[in-house]
Length: 147
Image (cartoon, rainbow, N blue to C red; front, side, top):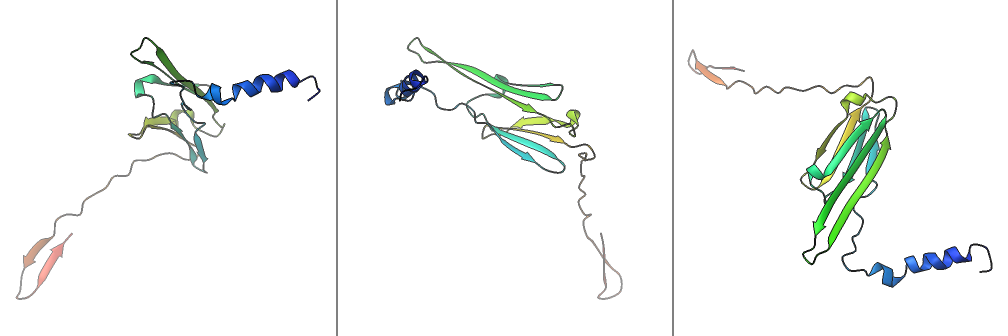
């Protein structure tokens, strides 16, 4: 390579060398980009954050920008500290009601964030159990059931 960017190629090759990837206690990816699902009625973001506890995750909504970050420190016992952190930012579309944005952390460590589009709203659906059947006998052989 005989160009002005030769030094970039050489220096970046050491970054990807087998020696650089074999550092002890080198963490893998902490959190992916997240899976975003857009539908006519809203959006859902699913972000794998299994390495973080709920209290280590911070979610902030500023105007139409949703920022998600997490940070934790692990003490290795041999005097070293391992810091894991991530930050993701998502721009919320104009047609989403900002007050409908909710989040929860699943038992599997997936952070789920969703919001509803304008024109759609969540409603609670109540369920009713059918009343117990009552058996009433009148004339011989007749059975009346009420529900």
